Image (cartoon, rainbow over all chains, first blue to last red; front, side):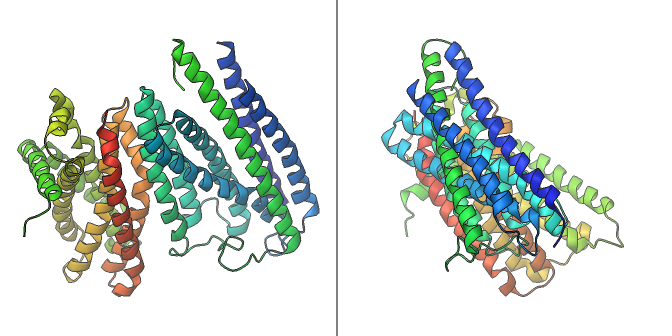
Length: 36
Length: 227
Length: 228
C-alpha cells in the first residue's frame, strides 16, 4: 500500500480550514451589519 | 435576529458533527488497498461535490420561480445558495488536487470532472460578480435569475459529459444506475459525511440569507452599500 | 413561402446592425490583426521537430474564433446605448424575440466572416490541408459558434447596462464557452488528422444539443433582460 498519509492530512486540514473560515466570515459580516 | 441565530446554531451543530465525521473517516474506516490513506479525502470531496452542484441547481430553480412570482425572498435565497455553493466548489478544487497528486502523480489534469468543477466555480464567480455589478435591486434579481437559470441548464451538460470524454477520474461508483458498489463501512462513512454537509449547507444558507435581509434593511434606511 | 414574422423582423434588426458594422469596419480589422498575430506567434513559438503544425492548428483556429466572438459580443448592444436607441427598438412593433434573433444573426455573421477568412489563412500560413475536410469542418465550426454566440448575445444584453461591463461579459460567458470549445477543438483535431467521422459523432451531437437548448433558453429569457 502506498504511503501517502501526508496528503490525507493536508486534504482534511484544507477542507476544514475553508469551512471554518467561511463560518467566521459569516459571523463577522453579520456582526458588522448588526452594529450599523 | 431569529433567523441568524437559528442559522448559527445549525452551523455549530454541523461543525461538531463534522468533527465526528473526521474521526470516523480517519480512524474507524478501513483503508482502501490500492490508493492508500489519501483515498480518505473522498469522504469530504464527494459530499462537497454533490452540494456544489445541487446548490447551483437550486440557484437556477429559485431564479425560475422568481421570474414568475417576483418574490424577493427567492432572490435572497439564490444569492445565499450561490455563495455557499462557491465555498463547496472551492473545497473540491483544493482537495481534488491534493488527492490527485499521490494517486495520479500530477496536481492538475484536464480530466473532465476537475475541469467541470472549475467551470462550476467560474459560474459562481460570474454570478456573484454580476450581482455586485447591478445596483438596482429589482434589476439585480432579474439578471441574477437569468444567469442562474443558464447555469442550472449548463450543469447537466457538464455532468453527462463525464460519460463522453476519456477521463482519468474514477467513474461514479455510488451515483450510478446500478446499485452502489462501495463496501458497507465506507458507504456508511460517506452517508454520514453527506448528511453533515447537508446540515452545513442549510446552516450557511440560513445565515447568508439573514445577512442579505439585514443589509437590505440598512440599504432601505439609507446606509451605503448593498446586499 | 412567407417566413414567420419573428424571423423577418429578426433579419431586419440584423441588417441594421450589419450595415452599421460594415460601414465602420473597425471590429473586422481588429479581428484580422489578431488572426495574423496568433498565426505568427504560434508558428514561431513551436519547435518544428517536436510539434507539427497539424497539432497546433485546432488551438489556433479556436483561439481566434473566440476572440472574434468576444469582439462582436462586446459591441452587440453598445450600438443601442447611445441616444437611447434601445428604447426605439423596444417600441417598434416587433417581438422581443426578433430583437434577440437579429442581434444573434448579426453576431454570427461577424464571427462567420472571421472564420471564413481565418481557415484559409491558417491553411496557407500553416501548410495544413483543409480542402478534403471542408464540409465537416464547416459543419462543426458552425455548430460550436452558434452555441456560445447564442449565450453571449443574451449576456451582452445584460452586461451593457452594468458597471464593469467589459470585464463582466467574459467572466460570465467563460463557463458557457468552455464546453462547446472543448468539443469543437477535439473534433477539429480529429478531422484535420483525417480520423473517421464516427469518432466525432458524439461531440457533434453534444454541440447540436447544446445549440438547441441554449438558443431556446436565450429566446425565452431575453425579454426579461430588456424589460423595465
